[in-house]
Structure formats: C-alpha cells, structure tokens
Image (cartoon, rainbow, N blue to C red; front, top):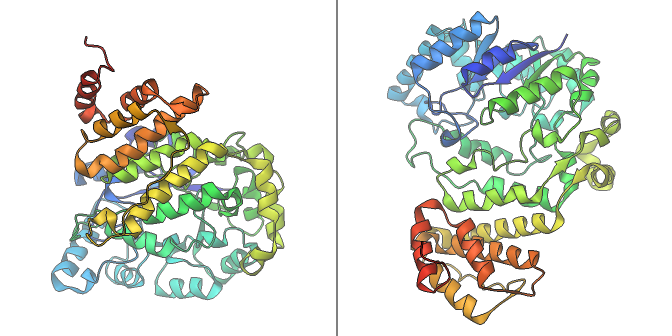
Length: 468
C-alpha cells in the first residue's frame, strides 16, 4: 500500500484535508532556523514556536507523524563554533520536546550528532544529499539514517533505485514533484544559497538574487525537451515504483497554497490526473510566491512567466515512462531524441510570449553578469535594444520623461516592463507603431501601486489623462 509524506504550509485546515488520504507524515520548518533549509525565508510563512508545537499536536491527533526540516547543505561552519554549537543542541532539544517524530537532514555531521545525542528522533536523509548510488546509500545508513529520499536525478533509473532498495534497511521515500533540470548544473549551488537564505544567523540578512532560477527558466522556456527530461513522476506511473519495492512517496510544496497541495495529493492518491502537470509538480511556475521576493527586478521578470502559458498535457504521456526502464540516460542523453519527440506531443508553450519572457530574463541576467546590477562604475554599459515596433516620436519623448518619475534604482526595470506592455497593446491593434494610447494603457497597467499617483500626474501634465 502506498503512503505519502507531504509538505505543509502551516495552514491548520490542511491537516483535516490530508487526513482523508493515505498521508502518514507532514513535514515543514519555521521560516528561518539555525540550520536552514531548502527554501528562502521570504517564501515561507512566519510562524511562532508555540504555533509550531500546537500544529504538531494536531497532526498527531489525526494519527499522522511530523518531520522537521534541517536540510541546508552548509552551516558556514557554525556547527563547530562553541557558542552556536550549544544553540544548535538547544534547538534540537526543543524539536524533541514538542514531539517531532523525524528530522530531515543533509549534513552528515548533523546526522551523527543527532543519532548520538537525540536518539528519539528518526533521521531522513534529504534529497539534497544526492544519494544516487548503492554505496552512498549504505554510507548514510551507517551514519545513522532511518529513511532516505534519493537524489531526484535517479527517479527514472529503475535499476539503481531497485538495488538501493535491496542494499539498505532504510525506508526509501521517493520525491515525486520535483521539476529541476535533469543533471542541473546549478542544483548544488542553488541549495547552498537557499540554505544560507533561511538561516537565522546570516550576515547578509538572508538576501540573495536567484540567478539559478533565472538560468533554469531560460533553458526550460527555450527548449521544451528539457521540461520532459526533468525527473518528476506522473500519478499514473506509481505502479512502476511499487514493482521494485518502493511504496513511500514524498510530495513537496511548502511555498504553495493549500488548494495546490491538496490537488497534488489527490492526483497521486487516485493515480490519475487529466490536466496540466504543472498544477501538481514544482519547478516550472516560479511566479507563485515571487511577490514576496525582496528583489524587485527579479519579481518583475518572473511574473512575466505566466504569459508563456506553459502546459504539460498529462493525457498525452501514457507510456512515456516505459523507455526509461531500459535506457541509460546518464551516458547516452546526447545520442537520444526521445524527450524531444514526446515534447512535441505533450508540451504546449506560447512561442511569442515565451520568447519575450526568455529575453527579459537574459536582459536582467546580463545586468547581473556585467555587474551593472551592483552599481560597479567600471561595468560595461548596457546596449540599447531596438524595439520590435517603432514608436511615434512624440510618444517616445513623453515615455522617456515619465520613466524618470520612477525612483532611479527602478527606472531600468520600469522601462523594460512598460515598453513591453506598450508593444503588446500596439500589436493587439495590429498597429506597426506604438502610439500614445498604447503607452497610456501600459503605464496604468504596469506601474506598481506606490508610484501610480506620480505616474498619473505625469500623464495629466501631458494632457494624456483627464482630470476627475
């Protein structure tokens, strides 16, 4: 019988709903801890210690267990400093006292420490530990692991998964909903910066720019085959894992809504989903929760993603998994066209909008890579891009003046966003050039609320907006 280990967003109503399904374990973490985790603080709900303790009590009342995340891959050596080491022990004691059943850990030293001093806590090795072989699984079991979530990169390597299952006594808990690039070059670094961005004692206030997501999105929205190469699992394909003895499955989604989590759990519980796989797996819809990102330019760029209307039609993927039972992807991916052919059938993408989205990301990434984003005086000047449509001369002059009403640090991103919107308006009118009406609508639609008043005053000054 299959069992699910499900992420919580700390919504109390989620507990009642998940109890209706074969869910045996919920997992979560505060928005920041001494260890840190696999999501940045700003994406997670701020929750008090008392609320966490009460939540775990309710989970237990519903006959489910609770696992606490301590899965950052690096603590910046704090664990070896006497002061922070003592605080770490105090935190682990608190976790034990409030009734946590298991901890999800990445750092081997922490596994050994917890096993030695907090033996009541079961230990699940995080997928961030990249357990991708029999030998590595045996090493983690030797360190004290009770459960292992394998590296998602081997999710379709049935031979390796089967042999890991046979080689260790640890329970294998397979992550189903990960949409990371196959053999992603950013993955190790990404989890490092996410870990530091969720640690209580972090010298840069847990802020960062997620260049990993920017690069990842460029690749995915430029090449649909990469979307199918990602190692997510369809609800319909759970039986293939049962055949090799794996019956425990993890569903991620801490940053997602309660409706999203329940929809995903329902789909995998029923082993069927007749819709867009993006609605039940992660890694493709970065715009969810991005409004909380402290980096305004990143927010503006990623919110453009929705216009691409990316769809993975799950009804077109029956039989897709069979190929992987005999294929050696790790060594022959470059010789194979399998995912590309299936992408033509199952992946739908608005070509024009996705191209525009990718270009906006590249534009922002160029600012970062040339160090313009950081205000370095010697940074290479930005190249002026030719607009896809021509601007009326008068409209362009007014546009440039109105952009100056934005704070200096936002003018570059404002220019990119508003001009893109104005071009869309002109295209909808089938006009070969951008005129005042396109610019006005773009400013009204694309200007953030704090700057709306100044923008409207500017439009009135040029006689483009009537006084009320």
